[in-house]
Image (cartoon, rainbow, N blue to C red):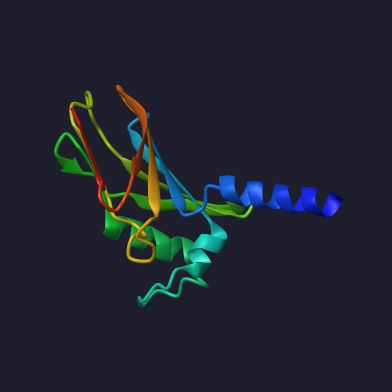
Length: 151
């Protein structure tokens, strides 16, 4: 009976496990736009990055470059260039913090394009969490829907 219970718990946990998703938390505060990027470390290890960057030895730097190539944020028509601030691992997740100085009176338009990781897994999802002026909401992007336009 214990074996069946353990088996059912394991199956239930794997069924509800979120996997194949990355989280992008954008916040605007004190003239800085910050992005907290979170992904399972095991997920990154499964991806086959064919680049000049050594992902195993320079994970944060390589992923920052990749994120900047595959995703863009525009505020009021201007592209914001995010730079690596710091990175760490926590509970099997890789966390990368990026930021950029922005000087704005108000945010009238916000456009986010994100096509990260779809070439490795077509069913991958990117969760965008916004806390940018009046835009405070969460969005789930997929290969078919890879852009958010807010105004």
